[in-house]
Image (cartoon, rainbow, N blue to C red; front, side):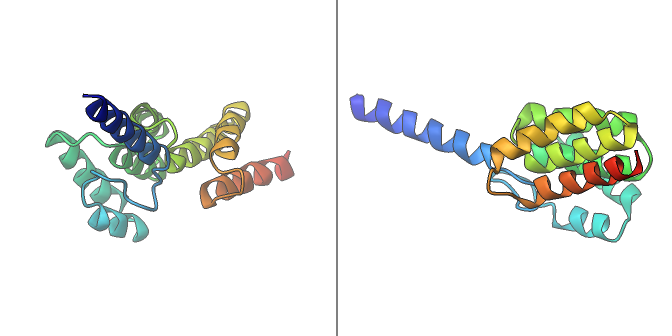
Length: 149
């Protein structure tokens, strides 16, 4: 009995720690195959990516990576309001999703909501104190705005 409880606790802790390190650039466990969508995004075929991602959601897929990439594609297509909704959804599923924190922060910069972008950066600093690509990219976006002001 105690062994079952310990094993269950360990499995739960392992699952929580895995989710905390989910990033956009590395698919998380349980994520659908997003390689085709990532190729579309890389080719700047955002409408095709939006269609594919919405198809996954319509099929019942609920995953932070899907919502994050949908937010990114919508933002790059000019739909900031809907993009913000999907970044929030990604962060609801995984509050430590580095990609969603970066992209949402970049959207906040685009919208002139610098304080919110800095909040996202503060979270990224906590998640990757030694630095990470997402943190560096958001720092660059904030630095670019600081130069123009």
